[in-house]
Length: 224
Image (cartoon, rainbow, N blue to C red; front, side, top):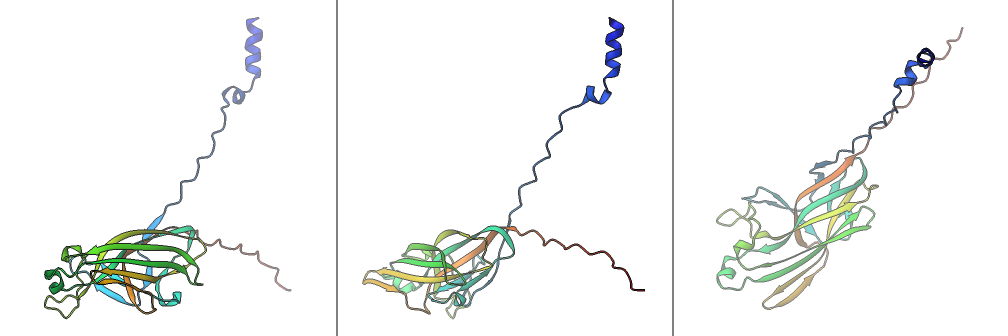
């Protein structure tokens, strides 16, 4: 009996005795997102902060997306995440601050649009100003004694907007500004007026794969 069992074992192929289930192929790594400052056009720069060294761009009330802050999107797959800081604008007066007449509450609304004037999303910043401590920074390049401009950003709202995959450029346009002061409330929406500022504009996206190269055809026969 032992001899028969030994013969049967020899008759079974070695590969069948050691065969293991095939391993599944490893899943491809998730796509790497890229975050960078985009190529952009700021029609009306406010200037650079003397302390933060950050560039601020005025948001104008306009009707045509081509006249807004243009943000170019590189080739991408899937949506793009656009982030920026939105600020109100304050014309600073030391005399008003000392006289306790500087209080203002600002509410500015802007829109991010496609180039065919389709609204993607709105954003709002609301802030109050009382003293110089409420300013984000002073802007260099002014004619004042300290070399700073009277207009300065105040208040900060961090904005996050998702842009659909099919867009290669978007525009930021101002919509409306409401200013509440001790002597009353005023609303501004006429075209051509700066109503807010933006800074720290960034995009995060998945780069589009490189285009596939076409097949090269074989050599044809040469004529005799």
